[in-house]
View 1 (cartoon, rainbow, N blue to C red):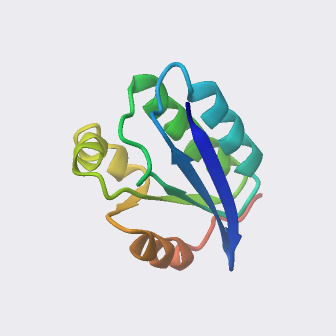
View 2 (view 1 turned 90 degrees about the vertical axis):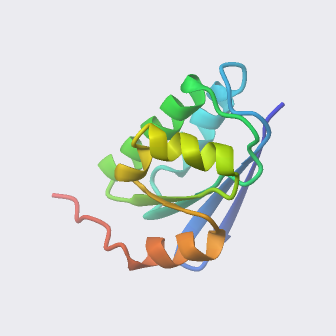
Length: 118
């Protein structure tokens, strides 16, 4: 079971999945990211996700790609050491800002100047 909480803040939206992000729940996560993709700035708070498999990681990357194609940007907050290690090991942190806490992710996200659409 995956619960996806969404919240609008000043200048960005927060997507907060709670539960395992795996092959069984990935379609729900993809749908949520697709609905948020048109926002200029998206913060994905992974603190409530104890496990991510390759399908979940793929959905995360796809959501980031979609948001960027629409002129936005994304930052990820993750305070779980095993998940943070996964994001660093896979090189995920080279394509998106990954921080240990939400406050740092907000700071990084608001500092990013979203690319202008042509």
